[in-house]
Structures are given as structure tokens and as C-alpha cells.
Image (cartoon, rainbow, N blue to C red; front, side, top):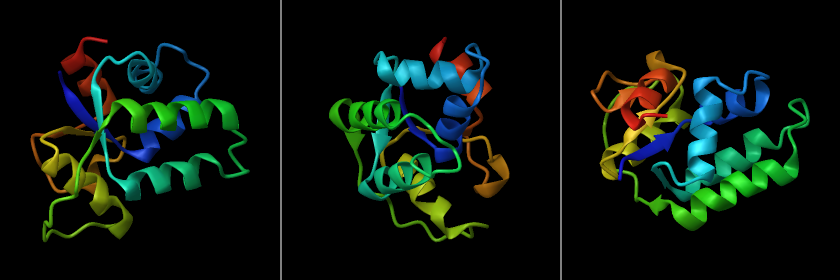
Length: 132
């Protein structure tokens, strides 16, 4: 099965958009329906919880918790690789290093935040890869 690390910005977009056919919503739905294997690290789960529970977003706590709990229950835990590369935002490094260690795609809406690599894709590209 295809494996992927999902950047937090993809999940924010999925919860935020009203377009139920957007690539980010299709990715969130694929997580919930086992369309691919999400790869995660504890640091990523902490970031998901912190960012998706911000009051300014006003996302449903029940929906956020259900998605995160599904990632943990059915995903694959990976220890982030130790990669020495520059990142504009040091918090992004864990996503890249986890994807690398887990032999997974990294799906992000912020391609410029990561070193160029074949495994780093945007949501539309990932939907094409998975066929969703």
C-alpha cells in the first residue's frame, strides 16, 4: 500500500475548505477510509493536535480527534531519520525526516519549505498517485 506523511497544512486546508472535492479533502477522506497508509511520528501528532485545535480555526474537536486517532490506530509509526539539510521552518524538518525514514511520500501544500526530492509532492500530485 502507498504510504504518506501528511503535512499539517494539508489537514488544515481539508478542514477549512468548503470544496468537498478538493485534493486536501480527498486526502483526509482517504485517511479515514484506509486509502493509503499514513506514516507519523509522535512529534507530528503533537503538532497536528496543537495546530488543528487552535481557537481561530474553530474546527470540530470531534472530527479532528477522529482523524488523528485514525492516523495513530491505523498508520505506521516511524522514527524520523537524521538528515542534515536546511529548512526555512525547523518545525517542518520532522515531516521530511519521517517521510524519508518511512519510505513514504511527503504531501505538502508548501513545497518551498522542503528540500527538493522525488518523494515530496503536493496534494494534487498525491491524489493522482493514489487514484483518489
